[in-house]
Image 1 (cartoon, one colour):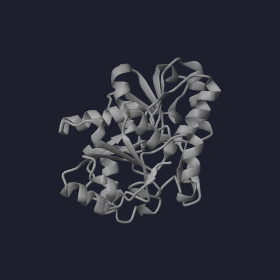
Image 2 (cartoon, helix red, strand yellow):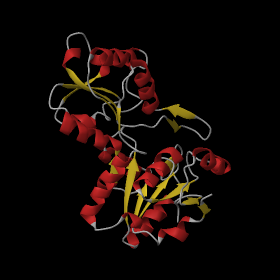
Image 3 (spheres, one colour):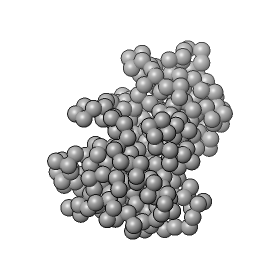
Image 4 (cartoon, one colour):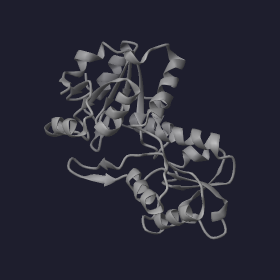
Length: 282
């Protein structure tokens, strides 16, 4: 079983902190109370930090603005690494022309619009333009009709041999203390099963998002993985991903993993964090 400690006990041992967003910095109620003190301390002690998130619903600029509106001004867009950025990189490298169809909101489509490709919501697909689609990107669980547009996505993939990219692999997200909502990762898994094809998934726990963040970090300072701590609230994404990349990890109990369930979940999954903390608040 991982060691239960306070966040203050371990923070001095690391130069760089990777934070998950939802469940660590913010919840459905707003910011985790006192989390602003953590970022003030990091700034005062010249510690680097990044937000590593599977949220592809909005651009890094929009995500940073949402923190600022809540009074947390330390997080700027250049400190946010979103799985949507990896989807954009894939499109830049692998899809040269044609239409990129997407499931998500217009805000989430920022990632594929910035690639210079012609983007089209799945709702606007028809017999005339469908043959021009060269990729499908699943970005967010909102912004489309779950009946007609999911059917269109299924039939697009039955008709066209194209890459399907999942920019957020999360299956669910908390909407209250006791309820969750279905996320785009779960819808993607359903479509994968129906069409019998493998999609390209970006985001935690895949190591690519950690490599992307580490490369951004190396631009700022020369460090080793031993100096980096990953802080997350979910074993199967944050902690597994950090462990796979070779980082020390902290499971906090302010989000998906409740204190009463932590030991059971660690035992059942076999995913063991380096530490467990009540929160990431100093």
